[in-house]
Amino acid sequence: MEYLIISKDRACQLDLHLRSTHILNSIPTITILYIGSNEEYIQGYNKVKNLYADWDISWIPEIDFRKDFINYLDTLSVPYFLMMGDDNYFIQDFDIQDCISILKNEKVYSVSIRLTDSMDVNAVTQHTMGHPNFIVHNDNQIMWNWTTMNRKYDWGYPAPLTGTVFRKDFIYQEAKRIPYEHPGQLEGKMNHRRDFAKPYLATLNTCCMVDIPMNNVNGVNNKNLNISTEHLNTMFLSGKRISLSTIQNIDTTHSFMSYDFSLQWESCDG
Image 1 (tube, one colour):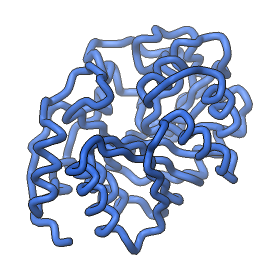
Image 2: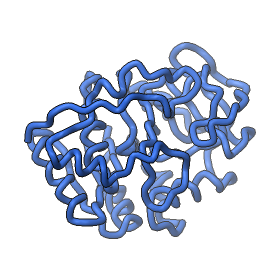
Image 3: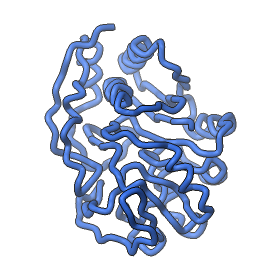
Image 4: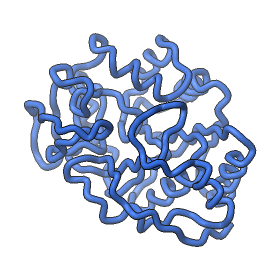
């Protein structure tokens, strides 16, 4: 299984993401598609590279996101891959083979590692959302027809580019078909085209990651905590890193996105 992380101006958050993989028994092959919009952000990424020099990570500096993403898919030798963002953090181990087994069902579009049957608050809007009629519903898997759900809410949103295992061939077709300049545009256009996708979504019914929206990039205007990328990068370059304790004991009962956490720092050697 391949594992793609997309990152912009968030070396400090990327460092926390990579450290959160300690909870996983098996770490998939990692590729990081990244960009720093000024020299200080680039220094942040160089620091991350040094800290993880002994990890098997492929680093792709972004020049043109659309071309770079398509090139990544061109070279991908496996049929499925996991996509994550630099502000997503693992909080629970999972077996990637379980996701692949679900995708053997040709009606399944993608598999989420973040949704559970207890979640009733939309991640972005924080509005209450109803549950679908589950086709499969047990402790290890839930499956539903996403095309019958509100496209503004998580149950009707088939292609989030974070915490999702995709079929390579399917995403490859869409990535080449539509115009976009950054990940947010790609995600939005894929999720608002309702007629092309396989009708079912599935999840392991376990929230394996938490999304902490400390800030926005690429001009996206979603709700966030207004902890600037500049501040985090300055702290990171000064020898501090976000402590793993920041992401421990976060309640994901109702949503995989959390606005309620305590930012804690620790020393970073390297």
